Length: 294
Image 1 (tube, rainbow, N blue to C red):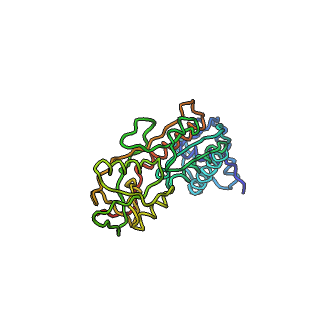
Image 2: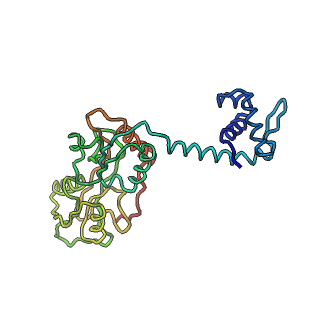
Image 3: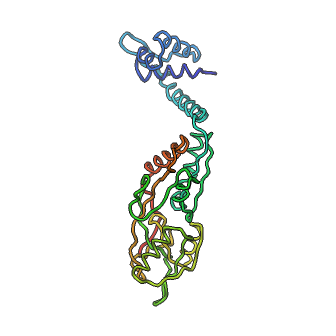
């Protein structure tokens, strides 16, 4: 049985408005055209779908059964049309972000954008040691998410996080030993904030592990090799927050913000930037991973 989606749409409109006249207004048809389409649908199905009186218009039992199927078919067709509708936006977007911002958000973000704007090519750089602010300023990136200590005074703030000292649950520091540290290579805000805080109060330290990846830093922490600085929400099972232990001082909060090139943004860059803001607003503050504190 091949049912015309236009007939199903008319049937749903009549059911939802309760009137041929209001359904015609919604569909921009004449009342006679709506009546004709309902008759055609009833003829195709071989069943009456509506009970008409001078005062009311109600679905028959078959009409009630048809309604959810019709609604599902129309929703699927609308979604299909949206998926393959030609995008008016094309071009390229060059985007950068620190690894501790994107996490598991990146695949979903890229998927949403690619589906909405299939004609746009994305060039994405995810790294903790890139000077993203400089790359945006020099025109090598169209937009980027940056992480700065305290409140960000540039761009659009996305969210704020608390930086903390983190070690393995089994970690212990012999008395008099310098604090062993694991950091991303410079430039890195975690590294800069942590070392600056230690130097300010004269705590002895030494860098024993350097890695450009989040996984490498996590491995160094979980092995008990070193202490590091992480956003609170990145603390994993098997790690503990050690603020105040071993002479480690409290650390400031940090902000993630979206910055854009000083040049006029292309429609593609504007669309991608807005998607980042929308997704971040819906997600709210990230859920923290399971952790323990001493």
